[in-house]
Image 1 (cartoon, rainbow, N blue to C red):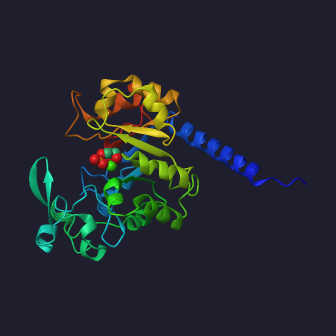
Image 2 (tube, rainbow, N blue to C red; image 1 turned 60 degrees about the vertical axis):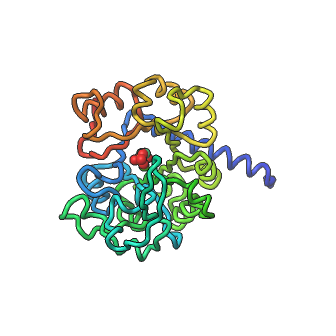
Length: 314
Ligand code: G3P
Ligand code: CA
């Protein structure tokens, strides 16, 4: 029997990876629309708490989103902001632990996640700001979120501000890769009940993830302010070298609805954000807005704070 050389094996492996990637794209671009619970069912429970994730599962989410930050002792936790004061009682519990930062030309006191250890963050109440019935909710570690969601829905983690951590010598993509490996979730199809899709606004991080976890889908987020409104085909082709899909702010798609067709033509999925009852633009209702994006514009999936109102049919 002929023994394959290392070079042949490498070529064979990259062929298999390419086919797997195409298969995952094909399934994401099927007629089945995908519901991502944005920060959990965050219209009804405090964002990024286990209560919000549990409710998202009960409301039928296909995926539950986690925004990820890193504690002072290097643990991935689920939190949208880089700092804790909006969604916890950190001011009260650790009054002296803030830094002064300039935000929009004004000095602000900020209690950054990276400045507190996990055991300190675990002392905070992450539920009372939303409602008294959620008092005592904690900021979950990503591992706690995985343990809760696994088997019931997919995971849709966002690497939040990895460039800020990078400048401090903290390698956020490595932490994400390690934790997925430790959970056996680092390849597509590893757990059919718990698919994983990665997302970030930071292309350098997605490139790292593409190298380390080539079979997992990766969504490149595109905001309204950080890029010109017009996303050219040249830019889409560049994105397709490190991502399997785009996650544009929904306003970008309203401004250029043909972006869906052009992204699909390059094999990229389209997953806009964020759909919530408080910002429905000119639509009559949240349902009508989501229907327009899903069935008129033809997006593959969307992020919503209201998973219970996601329209499965046109
Ligand atoms: O990740 C998609 C969407 O959540 C991006 O916006 O600020 O809610 O994380 P943000
Ligand atoms: Ca997010």
